[in-house]
Length: 490
Image (tube, rainbow, N blue to C red; front, side, top):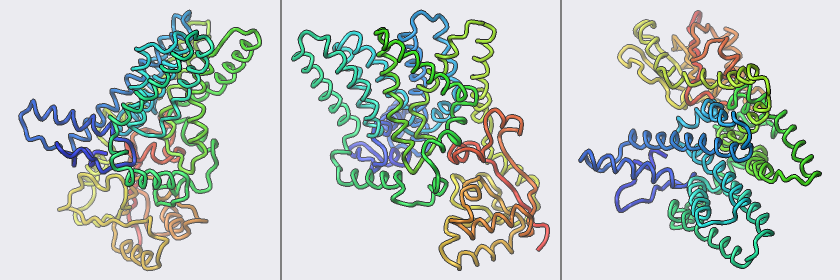
């Protein structure tokens, strides 16, 4: 995304990037151009500027999501004085914190999804006012212009529109407003993401490719961890406990059960509850659709995390004992507080390279796994000889295995910069890779582990989760564990 922003210029707004929509790209582009204008500098955008603004808007929209959460619970539970405290759980959600620091689309989709559900409650209550039409169309345009799959979040608006239709006296006029809303949403989509239409053939080709990867039809090296995994079970075991934090995750399913039971009781007594049904329509279709995909990355669950947090807090807000209520509230905040430390300290990869520069002997040969996000940032090239190896191609040809053997025989140290390779390549599908790591970890290959570099201490991992138990992208981008092995025998 940053590369797409940095290559755009005045008169040529084609980002030549169609894996996601263009709305966040244009936000970053025009913001960087504005800053350059006031600084009276050249109007070219650097990669660093593009990255900065992509992350800036990701964080900004994430803050907006916290605001939607407060308004939503206030509307559904107006009598609860402590409902505003949901902002603390939203603010200190590990998953939302991480997404806010990445310059991707998920924070925008969280903002758009929760905002549309809130506005669907407004439609159910007051109908389609001019203000609601503009707000809904703008949010729909932002969502669709960021990622077309966000169309799923329009379901609550459509349902609210249909439920309200029964109460409207001027039904033809009301239908006209609905058509106006649809056209205005399409206008904003075109405005925020024009090259999906101007370059529709290329856009369709890329979207189709991404869909094949997501479904597992197209096998690529970075989806190995999803082989032989099961829908729902994977998310419950390796995604949700980390992104929600253990406390909030443990409350979600009891909260869901209690909420649905209370809604069914209301239905029997004809006491409403339509607002909560729209709430569930906001997250459940997204959860079901993404759970059945072959690819089950953490980021696919980020847009609906606010729904999980709000529902869990709704159950906690029913606790009458104040001391117990605040105890549970603090326990729900603590994993996020601990997790946020990642962004207040030096990157663990940089710290590791500094340690290597200070502690390894001059002239040492370091063999490392290539193809990671960042290989060896800050390593002293004048002091060490470093060589990478592409383990993703190890199974393809015997010559690759011979090359690894030669490099290994010349290496003084072996560095595994993350868990991407050894944790995701099992003996059944990847026998050569699995055998290499079995011998490495057992010491049979002549190497012994002499260092493990990670952000969290062992006891802290009880609260934030061990990196080996999570979906890999939860850790490898911002807090991987690096493992250093030293040759102790030939």
